[in-house]
Image (cartoon, rainbow, N blue to C red; front, side, top):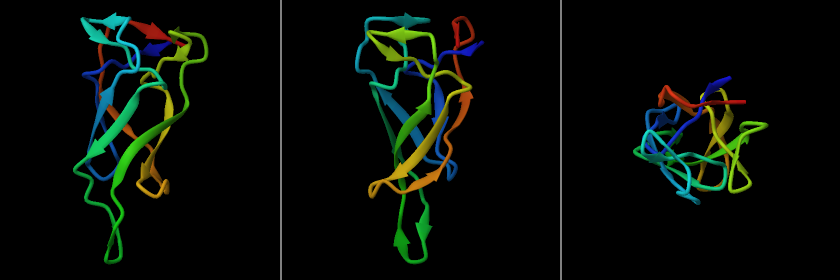
Length: 109
């Protein structure tokens, strides 16, 4: 079991860009904040990554292995142990997201 992420979890791309979560369903709250699911959008701002002279910043996160048993409105929740990929605007994988701060009360598998 691992901690479930919510809207105020601290998540970043491998290059230091900060991820923000836009909930698809704010029906379930953890510590007063909407729980994070794969149905919501994870947007990244401030990624400085470039390939040669071409800027190639991370702009979104796609979670590939969310929780297997815990869902909100039918969508699996994202946990601290979930595996994801940070993607550029061209959908090029840039590396895994880094989860550094999460709520400590609710856990899921």
